[in-house]
Image (cartoon, rainbow, N blue to C red; front, side, top):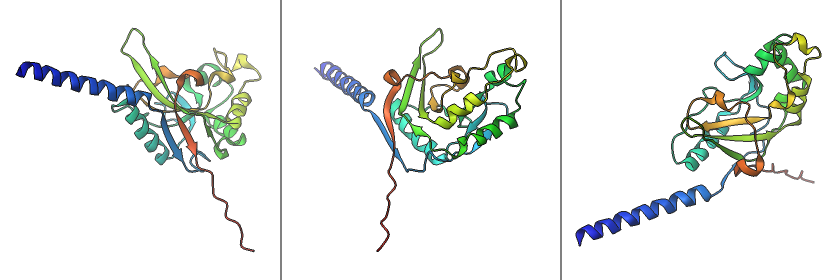
Length: 218
């Protein structure tokens, strides 16, 4: 009798656990930021250890809020990028298709000329991807954005004489504005360039508040 009761108890715990996991994975994530949270992110240059050479640096408060949300969704601790950033140029494409005509300082100058660091990024959603291969299952959470200034910079970087730029071919559309928030392992290089598909990747919303406009007293 006691054994039967014990087994029934284990079954109940198991079913409750499955229900909790199902509900957690089915509940959309939603985070809201101030209207200025995605405005005027500064340009930073890599110290040589990142998969990018130049990026936009998100505010610490934005990263901490997003990290807390994706950790809740994942149900486990995630690895955060050592240097959080929204890449402007990947190291591989710079080494193979740009360094013959541009230096890092030129990329930064062109980014500023395009207004990338003065723009308001438009978050599209909170996204999630899974990769199953020969190794362990890998998962990543990220925020894709829209930014005409980012797109313009990528076009502006196209070499006029690609034969002098490097051994590879630079493609402006290879990279879109994406901020990685966390992953199940620290191998972030494997994900770049990260291809975003709104139909399959979005698992939550990232919204901004509308600034309040106070009427001037008459």
